[in-house]
Amino acid sequence: MSTETPSRPLTLHRCRDCGNVQHGWQDRYCVRCWSRELAEVAARGTASLLSWATYHSDYRIPGISAPYSIGLIRLDEGPQLPCLLAGDTSVASFQQRITVEAGPAGPGNLQPEVTGPLRAIVVRPDG
Amino acid sequence: MTGAGIVGVGVVGPLRHADVDGDYLTLAADALVAAARDAGLPRETIDGLVINSGGEAGPDYDQLATYLGLQPRTCLQSWAHGRFSASVVQQAALLVDNQHADVVACIYARRLGTDTVGGPAWKGWSEELRKGGGPHGENPRIGLTAPLGTAALAARLYANRYRTDLAELFHVVADARLNAAAYPGALRPQPIDRDAYLDNPYIVEPLRRWDCTPRTEGAVCILVARAERAATASRTVEIAGFDGIPAGSGEFIWSRPGLGVADQSMLEDVPPDRTVFERSGIEPADVDVFFTYDAFSPLVWFALERYGYCPAGAAPGFVQERGLTYHGGFPTNPHGGSLATGQLAGWLHLVEAVVQLRHEAGARQVPDARLAHYGSCYGDSMIFRRSG
Image 1: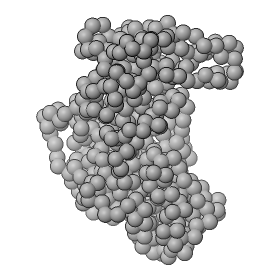
Image 2: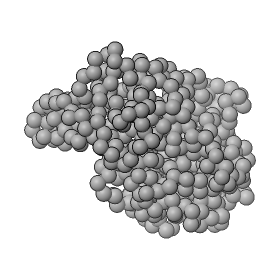
Image 3: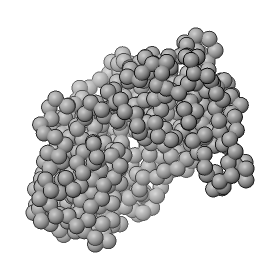
Image 4: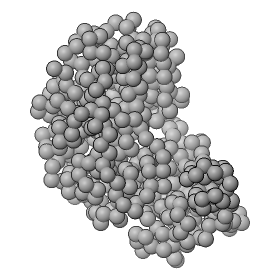
């Protein structure tokens, strides 16, 4: 994974009125109560792995080539989102605990490491 | 029960890119002219036009009207994604049923350029970078591109939740091949055995090349009108009821509610989606032939469970035991579907529903088919009934 772009924490939005936590891109309205009182909060960086898939064909994304794996995670705060997986995906299992890192905005050098502990790389909605 | 029916159909394709003669406007025109002839209706009677995929993907409503000398007084055009196939026909039925138009031409036409959205050569990524992910959840900034990416995630999640061996997708693919063998022009009519399926290469693991539709082009026109408008009224297929395409956190394009893809909750399985049956006054057991959007093989499992043909997690066994061929226990996509015949979104499925209910399907005819259900895993749904 490139280290040229400083890593920033993944942000979520918490409703000040009802406490609902939602994706960072849902940044103006609370999806549960329609409040516009949302506060930006940093994600804790921990999640459960729900699914994963491995690309064996390239789709011409600059900075990444097959094989590489993606995942679907549920953050401990609740929201679910897709991710790039770094580390050894051969040991992936359903609802495995996984750490979450906010990666650099692509396209860029996205090629993940394929050894070591499994990690989820996500992107901030604002890049 | 609506007062509208399908009075004519026209098809061009599905064709490989190299075999297409003409641009998307010509394809659409060929399909429309064929449908008008099928219905025995003169051009002047067509007073409504609903387009599925305009913009860069296909003809726009005004282009096509000018190109063919049509004078429609009511036109609509949807987002350029195949998911709106049934929805377009539903809009036409609403126009007819509410007397805003007498005869509505529903059009889908597709040519694959070098920049097809989500395709291997797509460089724009504009849709994929919209807030919340692309039209199929794509996000190229994490390598998640092509509709297949999220379909693969959905398939693995299904296997994780229900402890399913995804090798059982073989039955979906193999039955589609057997159906396609009786469809002239099908692109994958060759039968396959389990070993051949398991040797087929992964594209996005756990899904293989044969779990994905071949990339094809073509056009479809479906004419919606009151039955009495058609010169061949006895061949009109009634639209008995429908349910539109849903959205929201419980829905995802390559899934069914309750599976847990995207923002779907997977805390518990949800009850079957019975809306279309209640609106049509029928029960699932009354359905003679089922049609479902099958760009990827797991979508067939998800659709069977969505509409309650089998319980959540039971689709692999249901498919293996009942069989999906036109002479099997649960005929599904008897034309071979997108998986084996070729991809014209859901449009070829809708045409085949008409052909089956007219009893004009020849070797692949489902015996005495009187009720057909088109229902995608993502929720748009229609019931068709044979006239008379």
